[in-house]
Length: 332
Ligand code: LMR
Image 1: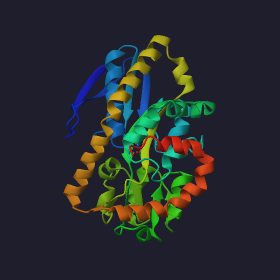
Image 2: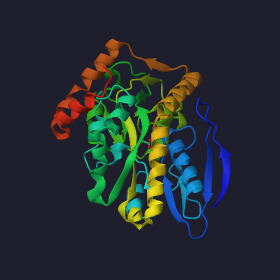
Image 3: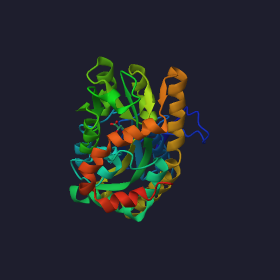
Image 4: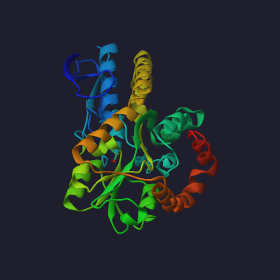
């Protein structure tokens, strides 16, 4: 395996990683990872690159990992089928994109359930959270672990300070019934679009609003075609790294064990950086626009209240006990 090093330009208080693009040698097992987001300066992209660098160094001659970003290889629309067909071996779709396979991850879409990404991380690392990794087993997919992104922020072609400001607008959403209900509760319309289509849809007016994390809003420049971003932190967006069972089982035992160890170490280490990366991307949006809408506790209270019907609609389906357990990971 020959490597070509590129220095990732992350203005962060973390070690600047060296991004390694692998050129796989004959005889090496190739694991392609496809992500729809940016690579540099993005929680998922940086974690994927760090994992690839470690795999390519520690498993040199046995296994080789390639990372493709920005929907270059597959989009939301075709990546899951490509994984089942073993055209790609690793994906990290957002938890909201597993609806066709399981409703186990709906809990992560419930608005204002988690106070912040740290509570989500603690929940995911708990026994109950780790049990969720098995939710995809019946579909031939294998959940390896959760990767963090962060809390979502709202934006539209008009400033969103109160829930009523969203009424009548059409928001781009991920394919999740909970998210659809969330915007329905505001009297807004929704359109399910692949991530790769969001910027154009916002720029053309096909949709007027969106919700996403600071890292996605900044790296995909959504904020440049919106009138302000509201710091709502109203719900979580993060990932489940998945492979297909056939690929996992095809790996020689020593390679599989070493790969899984590297995966676990990288996940543990890089999940801690997601918060910091999102903070940096929020500062970038502020520096470039000076147009971030901060909400008062009263205004936030109005958003919470507006989303209450979503809880009523999905509490039984998600499970009231599960919701209470998840809430117990909030700090207060
Ligand atoms: C989205 O579609 O908005 C996100 O799931 C993209 C991502 O992978 O963060």
